[in-house]
Structure formats: structure tokens, C-alpha cells
Image (cartoon, rainbow, N blue to C red):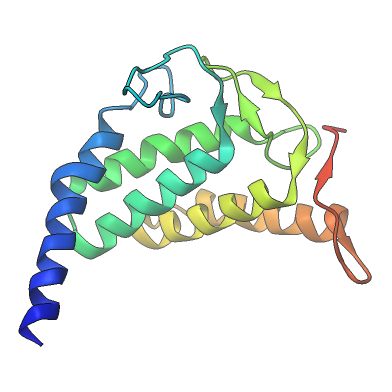
Length: 162
């Protein structure tokens, strides 16, 4: 049992001292988190930003907050949430695949996979923050998947923006 407790402590330390700070340092003041970091850790500040990346960041920081109650993690989650709001197609529904570095639609196809990850992140963010609008956006994304992607024997993966 002692070995497992030590491993748990080591994992928590790795997460809170390395992994989460790494991502917090990629926060873009224009919104969201930078969309590309190369193997040599060069940040490409003008690279497009994917919704799946932001949904995963949203989920991760929401989870970190729920486990630690440290405000810095909820703030990072809120930053990812704000970006995902920009990625929602207000006219036709669904999350765009990606946005430009400054938050305009870039790849406008809609993927069931991306929308599903957004639901995961939004629901956990709602749990962490109590933000009712996040839960409502998750419900809209679910409705979008069910009304556009669902078929008799499964789901279609992608559609054009319209």
C-alpha cells in the first residue's frame, strides 16, 4: 500500500509541478491556448487552434480544480471555456474543427468526435464552476450530434459547416 501512496504522490507532483504549468504557460491572451508547439518546444503563436485540444484542456483543468480546489486551475478552465464558446457555430450549431489564432473559424467542418469531446469538457466545467451556460452549451452539442450525426446503426463522423 505504501508503494501505491508514493506513486500517487509522485503522479500528483508531476501533474501540478510540470504538466499543468506547461499548459498554463501556453495560454494565449487572444483567447484559448496556443495551437502548436513543436518537438523542440517552439511555440507557434499564429497556428490555428483545435477544438479537441481546447476541450481536453477544459476537461483537464476542470478536473484539476475539482481535485485540488486551487483557483488557478479553474481560471485556466474558464480560459479554455471562453475559447470553446467562440468555436460554436451560432448560426447552424455544432463546434467548428478549428479556429484561427485570433478566434475566427478556420476549418469549419463539424466532427462528431470533436463535439463529443466538447461535451465532456463542458459538463466537467459545469461541475467545477457551476456555470449554467456551459451545461446548456453541452446540451446543444448533444442535440446537434443526435439530430445531425445519428443514423440507424451508428453515427456519421463529419459534415461540412452547413
